[in-house]
Image (cartoon, rainbow, N blue to C red):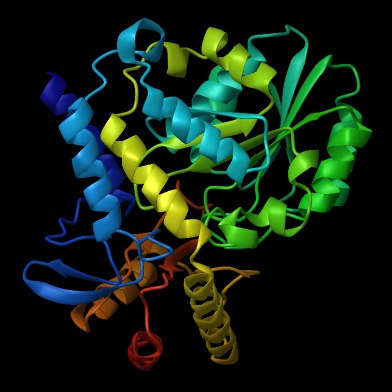
Length: 382
């Protein structure tokens, strides 16, 4: 009975052209990967600074395993809190110009946990969301059970109108990404921060795709614009530019204390592996000294964006290392992805519900490991 139910649901997904399958890589997720014995140029990884497989990071993890073992084996409120957790949090809070930080096993868990914890504080509370915020932010908002107000993507006039509508709520949480994961465009963070302060809303910014890539020492887009201190809550990830695993939240010491006591995603999960913390500490050290890699990444991103625009491809308003090519039609997107694959380029099709209906695309994600020759080969095949 259950299998019949699942078969029916899978058939429905397939008939809609939305069936997803796993593709198995046989190598590290660097600029080139091996799939089914073939070496392919990989334009789908968030390994922005090309640190996946870095020997210094690997060795740091190995040394820590020898000292602590691999697993923390318990939640941090029981017996899983180790000195290396607090060392990493201290370094991350300094990096993000905040008083304190708290780490989680994943970025998804961070967003869902932080939002749901904050929304448990007041009955008369609401969330203000950019229309194209990441799924993890939307899931946290929906699971909170609170009223959600939506403003048009990166539109500060729409945000202000929305904030005005929330005047009756005692607690307001406004959430955006700094660099959007599917469009590669920027939020006007100065305006966002100013509007949140004007209308007494707590500001929360997910810097998953800007940390390591933008700002002095890779501190992120908020630092680059000089508004880090105006943002109340900063979310980050260790699994993209840092090429490790996990997520983190930065803010005041009071925010950290509150989350330790009220965030179920922190309280009821086993602590992050000490080996991951050691890898993240070494990666943070490397990221801060990777200006040449960042400059190369910005150079090839601007080059590819300009060439695609000149070829009349729809790349939206991308200004970062994430460059979408909008095809709209699911079937055409899959055909494009498959033809690129046949010619040695790996870029999976991105389909709804990850992106809005009629906004199917291939999402080019550049890294510091890509060369000008990789870019030229891609353009030639495209």
